[in-house]
Image (cartoon, rainbow, N blue to C red; front, side, top):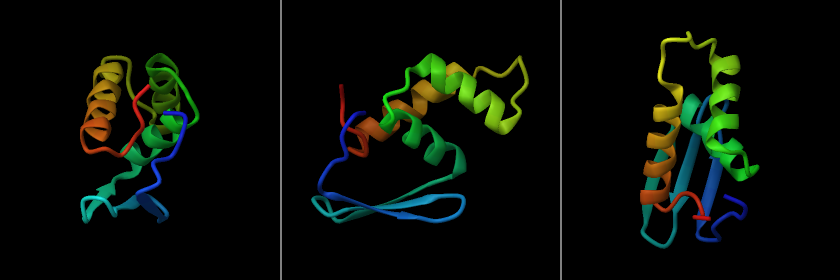
Length: 86
């Protein structure tokens, strides 16, 4: 995600984002992990880079399938129109 969608307004709270989608009149709340993933996607990070960042930031064990979780959250953000595809 390299650009912010113009119809979205973000309220950055300490551990979460509240996102208002003006085009669809919907409110979304991103928890701390989803907020972090959203920010990294906005910076243009790859799924693999995000996986590493999440493992460090949240002290995730080696057995956790963080890459699958990142893909799932990325897909959900895309489905909800909260990130620009591409």
